Amino acid sequence: MAVTLDPVVHRISMSPLGRLLGFELVEWAPERVVLRMPFRDEITTVGDLVHGGAISALADTAATAVAWSGVDPASPPQRGTTVTLAVDFMAGARGRDLLAEGTVARRGKTLCFCNVAVRNSEGELVAQARAVYKLG
Image 1 (cartoon, rainbow, N blue to C red):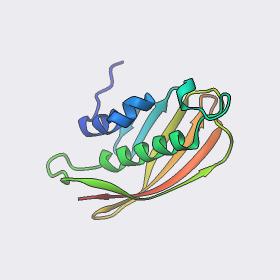
Image 2 (cartoon, rainbow, N blue to C red):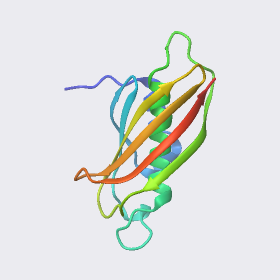
Image 3 (cartoon, rainbow, N blue to C red):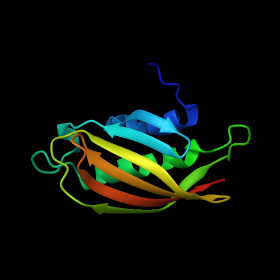
Image 4 (cartoon, one colour):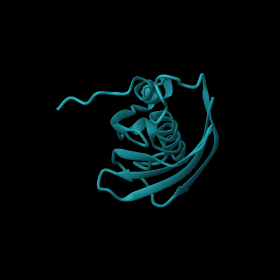
């Protein structure tokens, strides 16, 4: 089944950094986005342990994409930026693709409060993040 992609969310997930890290947009809906980061040796620190910076970039990109996912296409903001990002690492991400599910906890006039759960391909939670994103 073909999935219609939101062009803004797709552009965010396929940014130059997203392409470098291999991000794939898996699902999107207003207030929910799922991105995949395929495992590869270039994103590891030691052995098959995925670097925390790569996981943080995945979480930040998922939060950015979900913040834009609920924007009215008739009157989109001109810009946006991450205000805060806090990442808690729950377990080592070893040798597996990672999925980041971003959801909106609360959307204000310009600030969007987002939660991101990063899980390995077996569904185990490896990190969780909270982000505040400013639109406009």
